[in-house]
Image (cartoon, rainbow, N blue to C red; front, top):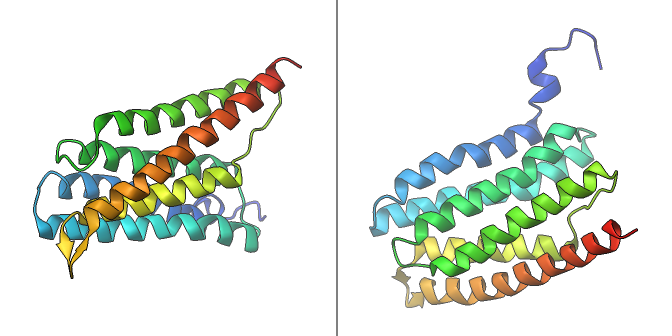
Length: 189
């Protein structure tokens, strides 16, 4: 790395820019979800889908291009949590998802983040597991369907979204339980 390299190229490489897009899409989604109509629902689904796709590519590009950074490792999971939490909360008043489901999902995310912070002080790093990646994928797929919500081409997107959300909820609880077991195993050492 050059000594006088511009800050933007060191800290805001393309993978981090993708992650920041994910965070930047949140206010747009919130505004779209203030309205309950087919146009806003469809636009919200498009914005959320594009933001979700950045989650697939930011880490992959960072690893392939040798651009992994502490900032990227911090921002990537934060962006996922913020994006998913914001949209789920906004779907509650529209009656598209029960509040208790949102509470379980967000509660798990907060709890796991807390466990990671406690273990990091002991020098133990709890990385995301494959199960957590499936959880996030199902959450994102469920949210896209719940955002579309309406029936198009005889496809009931709300029902599809709720089925996917039940799968995501099971994976959320399962992966959360695995983190707690791993935490207790490491804390008692």
